Length: 319
Image 1 (spheres, rainbow, N blue to C red):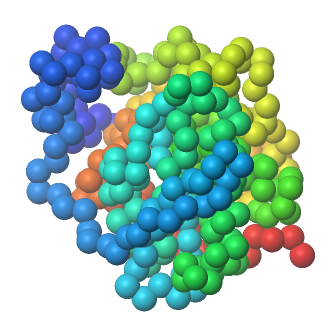
Image 2 (tube, helix red, strand yellow):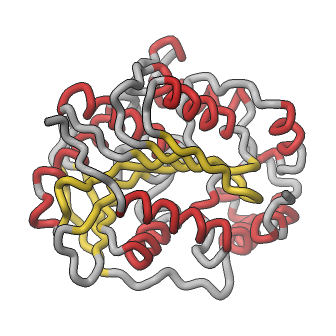
């Protein structure tokens, strides 16, 4: 299917721009950046929020809690935004719009985690440790959060999906905890598998600055690891982990995304390991589609699928 007009109609704004970094940092491109980010006619749903902190081994981990009006034993999703481990924040659409939509649609509590980014010398395992600490804090404080301790799921988008999956492996190994895992366009491998012929053909329709060629993913992953790719383990890149015994997993891949090769390969490995995994390809969408408004049909469908999965999560502790 062709790329959705919500994305394709803005490709002209990227002409002559060398990188996403230039688009967001060059003052001369400010008008183009605003036009690229704007989505007329959409307002994120109003939802009650509050800030808190989870104690962690590297210091407090800020979290923003989104809750329905009468949160009481509600299902919960602990959520990590994307941004290549170096960017992203709690106010970006993939964090804030996403959380507001999920609370409104599914009546779940969202705990959005402001994990430390890999800048100024920060590297793995710091972001990973932050996410694990946030999950344990939610479990320990479930009652005060209005959360059903038996139905706490974990998820994220892009780099956040990597962190969520790595944390799920750690929680299985150390806590015997098997939470439902929600992965939006994940990068689960330290080296992204080569694309299929059909995916490679589709990607020729995507502007270069919206793509993830091998050199880009290598740079991102080495920066996260703080050194060579050979330093990666199964907590840093969950495709390297033993996957048996993980809880149920939902993988949402974008149709037009170089990283789809990683999401598809990871879903296949989960299935081979006997994990209850469901993989869904979101047609017409590019990487990062959860940054788009919830009134765009493929995004709306993805949000409803995530909300239903979180709501149906089953007890996740080994007995």
